[in-house]
Length: 311
Image (cartoon, rainbow, N blue to C red):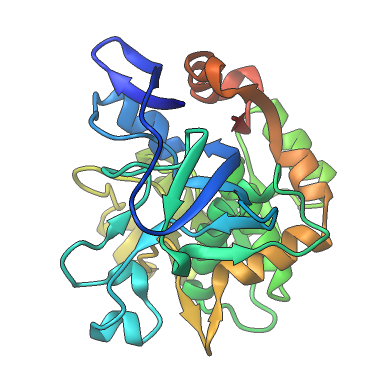
């Protein structure tokens, strides 16, 4: 069978053996290309099958989203509902330094599976993963009734963050750079930036976007950076952050609260609003075209928002 790996010559589709480890066998139907995938590939990270945003079908025909967090379940963080913070040996993520879902078939732990609601196509269910990242970020910000929320960045995470805010009972404005992102935001009914905000979610992940987030935040406001910073996070200095007494709230992945999986909440959000997938997924490619799909995913100016591989 085929799988997507990074090589000395960049992203390639190679032949690999059928999975035979213990677990549930899933035939992958959709695998999203995340900005993190593009970053890891361009940084030369190799040694595993890519793909942490994926969904598929088991041998009985049941459709599932695969929550890629691998955890032990016994540590304090896991028991508190934060498996993404697992402190046990072996914790990690499918598709990030271990084999993931950009392949035809994969065997996964049963606890990673989320049965899809009938209204959500397995072809669109790969959006659950970035949607859960966004959903968790909104929860981490702890918005209160009447507070204003701005999302900086109009990629898939940004659009899903604005949708997650709405799904949790708040309205959100969105600031985007590229025409396709602005068009998507308008199509989904998100407002344009105006004035100061209580909560700013930085979904762009750059020094410029963090500067913009700090500028847009009101005094005493809260900023949630969602970008991947491999070395240091360039938080604006005392002239802005300290003078305004801004709070920076870290957010990573997703977990549970009150016994509910955040990925399940996002599956419900996507099932209830099919326009999200229709708008955010802009490109679909067969698995064998992964190299071109990665190129397109890395070119936001060309109109790509979410690029999906379909084995």
